[in-house]
Each structure stands twice: as structure tokens, then as C-alpha cells.
Length: 165
Image 1 (cartoon, one colour):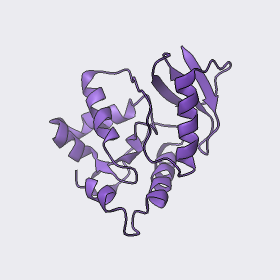
Image 2 (cartoon, one colour):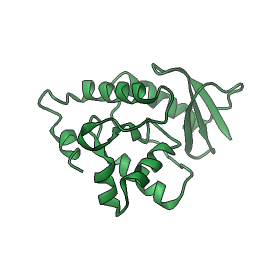
Image 3 (cartoon, helix red, strand yellow):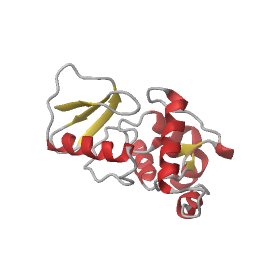
Image 4 (cartoon, helix red, strand yellow):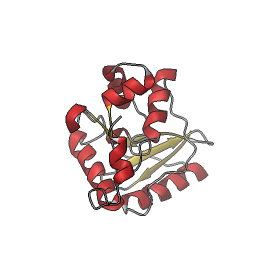
């Protein structure tokens, strides 16, 4: 298994892969890094994301989870940069329940890249966030994206429209 520790504005991140795809992103540091090409590219793309130069990741992903959880993660990947969706809207889209969607968000093994931070409770309430720093981290990621996407400045209409889900 490949692994790589990187710095980020949110603290150190641990990237893991299977040699052909990224399998997880977590908070902390590995004792020993064993990077591969996929993880090196993931580190490059995350750095660009955190500086606002990248709005869409282009990485092979292989998150481990049930078919339902993978369907939720796939739906999250469709939420545009700077936009949001709701647990209820996603549940309706997937023929499920909001709590099940929330459970899949909480079990997301590749946060930031699979953007569970873009999923909110009804009425715009933040809901939850299982990553390090909890809701503060979720708010920071949403603010970063809104700042760089220009949401609220006239050019974020597509991202705002997605929130109707």
C-alpha cells in the first residue's frame, strides 16, 4: 500500500493508495511515507485546491464501501465547486433517506476530494462533518470554495442552483 503525508492549511493529511488509485485521505502523519505516482499527483492537486487554483480533482479514486455509500459518494462528486446540496435532496435523488445519506457522508474515506463538506442539512444548516476539526473544517472548506468560485459575486449561479437538490 502506498502512503504519503502532506501539509495543508487544515493540518497534516495522510494519503493512501493501492498503486492504481487513491483510497483514503485522513488527518495526521504516517511514520514512513511510501509514495507512488497517484499519491504524488494527489498531493499536487490538493496543494492547487487549497490555493484556489484547482476546482475539480482529476484522480483515480477507489473508496471502499457498500454500493449505496459509493452511490452517495458519486453523487457528491457531481456537486460543483462552491455549491452545496442537502442530505434530503440527495436522498430524494437516490431513492433513500436523509439519515442514510448522512451516514455515507460520515463514512467517506476520501474527504475534501469527494466533497462531503458540500452537503448541508435543510435550510442551510451545516449538518455534520466527520473530518478533523468537525464543523470548523467544513465551514473553512466551503468558505475557500465560495471565495474562489465567486459565489455571491454574480458568477456562481450554477453552484447556487445545485443547492435546490
